[in-house]
Amino acid sequence: MKQGTLRRMVSVALLLLFVVFFSVTADSFLTWRNINSILREASVVGLLSIGVSFVIIGGGIDLSTGAVLGLSAMVTSRFVTNTWIPIWSIVLAALAMGLILGLFNGLLVVKLGLSELIASFAAMYVYRGFVYLLAYRDAGGHLITKTVQDRQFLSIGGNIGGIYYMSVIWLLLLILGTFILKKTTFGTYIYAVGTSQKAARLSGISVEKIKVGTFMISGVCSALAGVFLLAWQGSAGLNSGSGMEFQAIAAVAVGGIVLSGGRGDTVGVGIGSLFMIVVVNGLYKFGLPIEVQTIVYGAVIIIMSVFDAMYIRIMEQQRIADRKTPAAGEGGTV
Image (cartoon, rainbow, N blue to C red; front, side, top):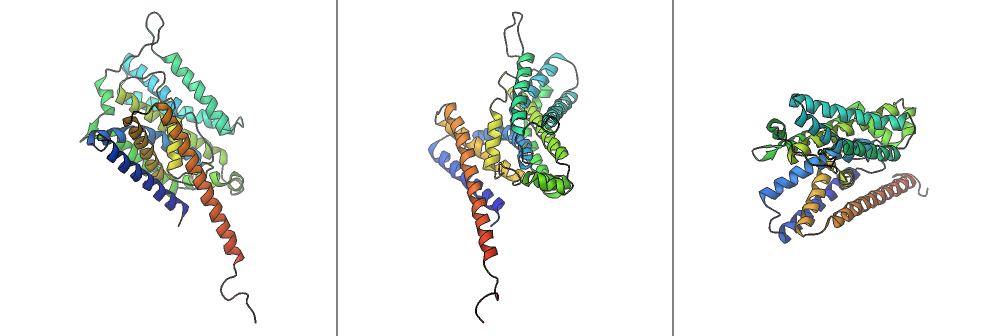
């Protein structure tokens, strides 16, 4: 069985296991209201996960997604509450900003030679700092929260037939992401770069362009998540998106994307996003503190990474054994 198929089966099994467990132990878990809430929260994390999955499959990591989300939400809030610019123009500007921030991250890696970890970690603090600078203040300079009143913008966080627009967009982007990765040359190059940068270069692939491209995708997805989160909550705070980068990475790990790169797809990421929110939602209903949720994120990443490492090792040992085993008709006595 292929690793991707096995990992997806494991992810689905874990998701169903927790759904059944929380359905039995928590009375309000399996209700339409709670299911819709899970889908809405999973959509925000899922949008981040789609973007970061491209970076990770390409052999990198992006820790700035939560900060990009927060900055996009804050900038969008500023424009919506203080200008008469058309809403569609503001949304496009937010997505363009996410694209530029992703481009900046990519250039830090390919032009300055920084590792993806260091570049995105530093960028996370820079972007979060801009969130603090743009935060609302009263006449005395104290930080305040200002709600968005524009109904047209808030409608972006609405629903149709009980299904939220952000959930629909998330599903469409999951399909688009799978198509890009599996059916386009760009997607093939991403897998090649994630598997071996050296081999990719020898094959004529521009590793630098591929890496910058994955960061730009991550930036746009993070900005889109910020727009939806603002439209849903109606306000942007200092900590909007804070810590969500780790939720996204945990969702990616659960979804079967190997953190060393070169394997996985966005379908698994969708399953992983649902899994993380189901677990968080269930733990919340048990009244467990946020510290436990944080432990869960780390534990999930460790467990799934160990599983992937063990599976890869077993498959490599199996291939070595197959090469040593003589084919039928070979060897033997004469």
